[in-house]
Length: 580
Image (cartoon, rainbow, N blue to C red):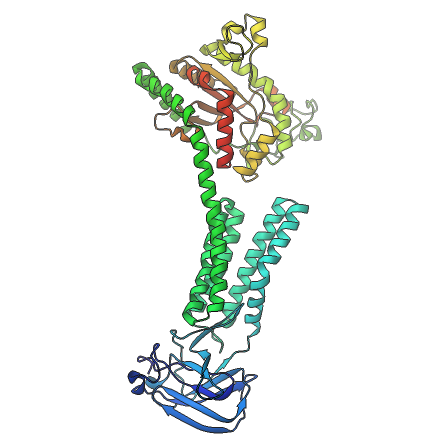
């Protein structure tokens, strides 16, 4: 009965037809099977989805089994059963069908649960079949795959081969983004097709059991996750591959339950191979990061000693707290996120003539009399809904902005006793010496020997875009940068106040890496204060560069003196290992 799990049905081609055997894995000849009873209104083989018209020798019912014998061998590709007119309590819900040519050697050709896979048909005896409650209902079980089944099976073989080939060609000939789009589109298309197959299966005579439907939905989910993760969070792609390998391995578990050893071997082999590749990539990446971090240990230890000397000094700790308070106050006044943005487009009320709209020369034909720049839009405005998208444009802006920033940092250093690195001095050849700007400006030879920070190279900018910013050009806010060196924390605080109070400066972001709560492991123990700002003056508006964000590094002299070329190369190796 439905609650007693009255047996499993199986059938194929041969002289013998259906034999109902095993209940929950018990042999039909066992003592428990002898007392089981079930009722059928009919049972027999099918060919081309129709009952086979063959002469029956006899029908034998024995407890939990029925054996249908034919006078001559028959060909079949399925079987059917008909619910009885008796109580539903006597309906079979777990069964298998076996076939034999001699009545002695039987092989399984069907069961209460089965699935079509790319490598054949898998039978599982432990799943219940949802036998209809309707009396006299004919249920057909066909071994001929349906169109959804064949489509899903063919795609299983071809999908990723085709997807990867298309991805490779598009990435090579059209660019990385097109290849990425092809891969994501293929994964989502495959998910849609498998999901459609699940819908077509549902409610049909070939509807698989709950386990198969679960795994079909799992495969659909995995394709969706792989596709969406690749598009939005590419860094986690390898973890999706690991889950996909686990999914394939689970298909091997289904094969193991059904006794399909051949299919189990290939599913297990594929799953373990995919998981092995993913695990190798994950473990290798973590090992590389660990080795790179070990390379920075000497530098981190030295920087930590310097930092300990700073925080142990009572005055130093006082000024560190003051620095934290100032940076927090500046941070509360910052609106939005630090990005490179475009100007706002002029509205109709502002545009008085075509010359003003073009933004190329000083407009003398209209009342606004504005001197506009080569960058289109309203001077002095920032459109935070329009991030910069051209790397070339940003580098053109750095050419004009670098000397302006240089004059600014000289003024700030003069007012706060700031210093700059001077190279080539006889007292310390090969190593920079940090000299206050108030002294440098009095000596032309020292002024020529100052080592100013250079614009970020195109190679490093592109590297950072690919590794950290997902191609978002607007996040490059440190193309133009300079630094000021301070003797003590009190001087750094003084310099920060001067910069923040400059009427020409609009602070977009501030990072206080001198905060005692800051984790220095990401920077190899190195600490400083970073200020990202825009310089908005009449001159920068004329040049159309007032929207460009620059970076100022405020560094303690003790940390600056510890920096070496060898240490920087070690940090670059660490950064490369982290993919930053």
